[in-house]
Length: 165
Image (cartoon, rainbow, N blue to C red; front, side):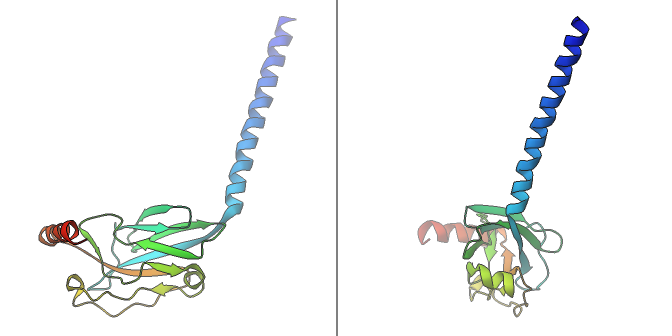
């Protein structure tokens, strides 16, 4: 009699565990169904046009800022979920002092990014002289141009931001 109670208890516990895991899987499915599309941010060196590996870039997707790091191809991929925001904002420097953006615009229409892609225009600034011409963007892609600042230029930037920024 005691053995049947133990077996019954184990069977009830196993079934209830299976039901709780099944619930967790259905929650994940709901998240996947809300997934909309990917937006790629291509980070290029302003002088050479080559992809920049390991660059941190931020993207505001309507619900908050997300920071991604570029791969060897210079791309950081961001997932956009429903509802899709009307505009996407970029922080090419992601708060880094030795990072400098040579791209002029920071907000883009989401529909234009998804349909044709956008290549940012190079900013006319002393840190961004001798730059390449712009590169064409693909659908779902934002192209930005950046440079790393050496210690002297980083120091100058900190001074400028402290007194004028």
